[in-house]
Image 1 (cartoon, rainbow, N blue to C red):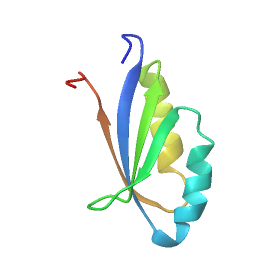
Image 2: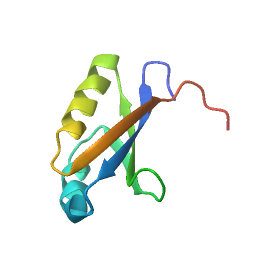
Image 3: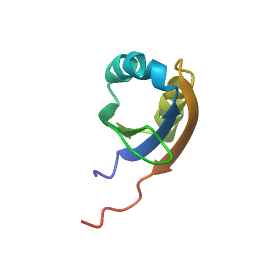
Length: 82
């Protein structure tokens, strides 16, 4: 992670019948560098990289308003260990 970048993980709970539609919409967001379907309390996790906290807030707002999103949790990465 470069010093000027903010990296975060965004965990999403989604309506299963909207998953394909969400995949298409999320793939169009350039700040989303990786996206995975996961098992557990959430259905998707997004790895995002932005320049500022304002940019991160904009991405969170954009993702949280997509059709089919039931819940969202964001974790800002602070230090790479390995």
